Image (cartoon, rainbow, N blue to C red; front, side):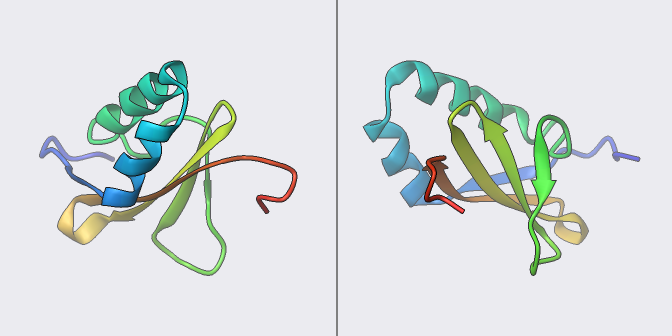
Amino acid sequence: MISPRAWDLHTDHSVQKTLKKIPRDYAERILFVIRMLPADPYFGDLQKMKGDEHSWRRRIGEYRLFYKILKERRLILVFHLERRTTSTY
C-alpha cells in the first residue's frame, strides 16, 4: 500500500542530457512519465532488474528508463535513459 506522503524524485544529469538529444515527441512522453513517478513508481510497463533489489526498468515506446526505488527513504532515483535497439540487452 502506498503511503500518502509523497516520494522524492532525483534525476541524474546524464538523463537530462539524453533528453536534449532525442526527438521532441519522445522527450515529452518521457518527461511526462518521469513527472508522474512520485505519484506511483510501480505503475506502467515496468520490470524489476535482476541483480539489484531496488532497480526497475520502465518501457516508454522505443526508450527504456532505469530507476531505483528506495522505500525506506521514499526516494526515486532516475539514473539512466537509453533507446532500445537490437544490441541494447
